[in-house]
Amino acid sequence: METFENLISPEASSLFSVESCSCLSGCGKGPNVNINCKNSGKINGEVLGGITDPIAAALLLDSECAYKCDRTLIAACDVMAQARAFQSTTKKEKFLTSVISNLSNNADLSLSHALVSALLERVDLHLESRNISEATNDCNEVLRIEPRNGKAWRRLAEALEMKGDTIGALEAVTKWAQVEDVLVTKARKEKERLSAKL
Image (tube, rainbow, N blue to C red; front, side, top):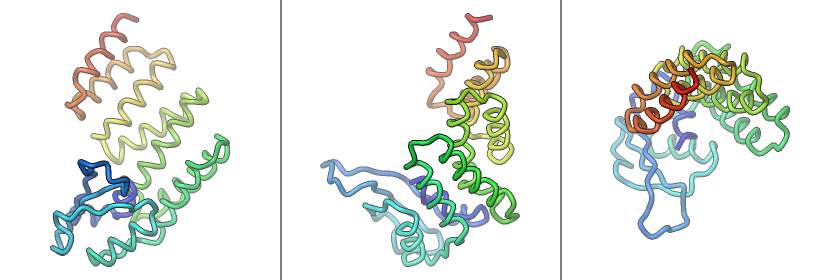
């Protein structure tokens, strides 16, 4: 599902909704998605399966929704997929950084979901290597683009806690709970754990 979101440019994001869905029988044809195109009624309600790579997703959006994906977004999704396949953290970071650099420097794509995805993947690498400053910077960049990104608030809390800033981590967890209210119980437990450290 994220591949579809990453392929849709910021100005076109209101034209589509993409939802993941599953069949009751575990059909094995996933991942399954339901795409609603507001400019075309062709797919509305139809479950599509087996869309596993960005090129197939882009072709589907073109043929069924008459939406031409930006080639830079297709390339960014492909490079992110390559980065995920590497075992080496250094190679992953190099590939993600190239995506981030290209999208950040493109005025039309500097607010794209693909950029947010690449930044969040790099945050995870930074946290894994305990590069707290870079993790914090990337989280803040995501939150500049998408202030209601719960994953970024959660990762920021993790980075701030690693830094020893428990109060900052508590504030980030509070924001996380506000933007992802379905996780309010988990956030409450996290707040209790952090408060005990004060």
